[in-house]
Image (cartoon, rainbow, N blue to C red):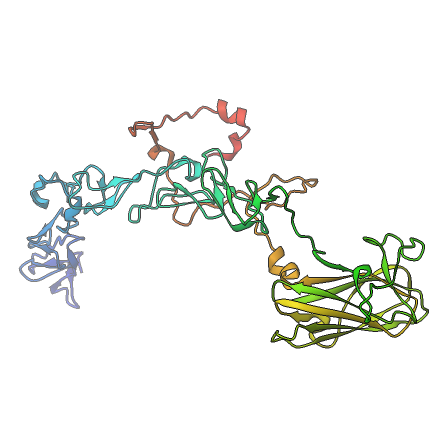
Length: 440
């Protein structure tokens, strides 16, 4: 068959042709028709938004052939003078307000957000606080208005320091610096956002709450230390004690209690001011060749609703002072003491035993959470750096950040006016920065 004919006998028009035997080309428009074929009259089969014999026109209510777009402009983004999609210049669909973009005027331009009907410009300025944004970028999310904040900065406009940081400054890599409030002296880890002053506990002062007031002191790990030379024997008379440096070198206070045939047990009175579980430390010298076993008893006052506490202790032979961290089967050698007066008794089954002191350590002193100090401040890498800080690599940009071609960059001056950025394709500056190979 010839090119425009078809059929087994060449007695019909080929696909895309009509009106046998002339077999003229249908010429259906590629965009508007469903295919290349037409009926015997030359009418093409049009897609939904198209009409005309060749499907080369938009139906009523659709504009910009061959796109035939619906006139669904966003009313909030249209200029007041908009007269309809058929009144704009060819190729355009809607007429957007000054700060609005998009085919249907439904998006804010960069540096703006919050598309609103009653806004004559369509969108409002991001107003990002460039002291707190990454690289002083003024672009924000066009829907939420969130600016791209530095790591320690928060707020929609990046105008506030995050908790536990203060003093927002554009020169700072993370925007704000760590409060560094003392974990023991401060009420919390947060501080004044301008001065960095932490909220101190009673009788504590200093910017980070690390200093005591005059006539006060910080308690030590050995705050509740009871010197045995100040104890008593069961008869109520003062305990026998010695102070010979050769027997007990570097003993504390006035000396040490002596366990002998004349003194097998000693006791003292203590007052517990805070209910807690306590660990026990004993500083002793055992001149025996065998282990000395002893019992440490804590008796509450009669009016207290508390039970007697008993701990067994074993003191190995030693000619030098030794610290014994008491352990046991019950509560691992720890005791539970409530608020009020207690009597403490110490017995030993052998002589030639010398006790310097006993220490009670409340749970708050050894609780691991107390010694965990959160650090967020960065530091420069230095193997000899003894500062407590965190090493950072260059931080990633936020998830909602975007890449912009340099041609879209704008310079914003202090008055808020925008002007195009200046482009320089010279390699002179790149050579000075030694970065000429890093750019295309």
